[in-house]
Amino acid sequence: MLELLKLLQDGRFHSGEALGARLGISRSAIWKQLQGLEAELGVEVFKVPGKGYRLSSPLVLLDAERISQAAGEVGWPIAVESSLDSTNAEIFRRLDSGARPPFVLLAERQTAGRGRRGRVWASPFAENLYCSLVLRVDGGMSQVEALSLTVGLAVAKALRVCGVTAAGLKWPNDVLVDGRKISGILLELAGDPADVCHVVIGIGINVNMLVDTPALIDQPWTSVRQCLGHALDRNQLAAELLKQLRVHLSTHWQQGFAGLREEWEALHVWRGRSVALTAGSNAILGVVQGVDERGAIRLSVDGVDQTFSGGELSLRLQHDS
Image (cartoon, rainbow, N blue to C red; front, side):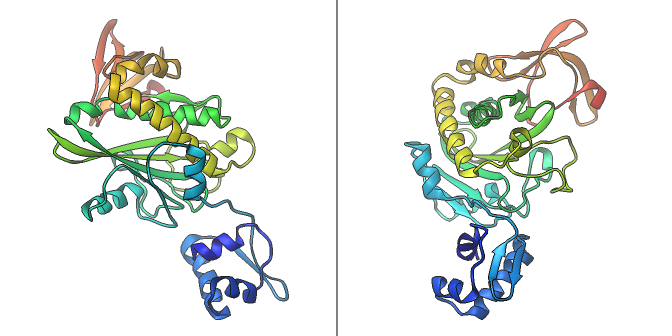
């Protein structure tokens, strides 16, 4: 179906006969694939007798070769799939089947996209970026300390290069624009946490999603399209994201988060805000001071500066808690 969609993505009419000739299949097979596009991927196709078939609006699909060329020498093989349950989950399956990192996997949609703490990540077809990068990590868990903050910094930088100049960071791994979430990050580990392991970096970015698209999002959100007022070629953003990841991860491996702390703080949007830090049913109220060199959040609690870190912690503004 993806090959058929590539022929239709220009938004023009194409006859069933011409489509079948291009793909080497019958017109009836074309018809079945068109039905699949609508039923499985939610892609609306107009059918007009005498003219043929066209999409309701043009699409720009992800193209691994275009992304690789635009990203330059990042050194990571790139693959694009039309539909996956989750790019992170597929990475783990490929590792189990003998695939060797590093490599990048993108999907046009996810049927079971995941965020932090088990949340659903809305993943409509051909609208956003769903991207996972897997890397080998030598030396155990200490190497990935504050890695989610480094990845968030790379995402925010990529968005800013692509025109979303208000993109900022919320601890530990959200990217916000004017208080609304535009990107989230999910890091997962496989292997020996004390020795050699793999880290899977999952990144979701709302790119061309419109306000009325998802019904699953339970928090204020925005998209690149809403920020810019027009759609963005996701290939451009994907290439810039990989370039920024390459630069910032290189610094992280060499210097740790300490080498990126100042840059991260420059984009920190909740400094000075009154927040509730929660772990389970327990909440700590304080004022955000920043982050330390290990990526822990610094809060002023009853006038005393304290630091907190941990994967299950959640930070909310006090009036939202």
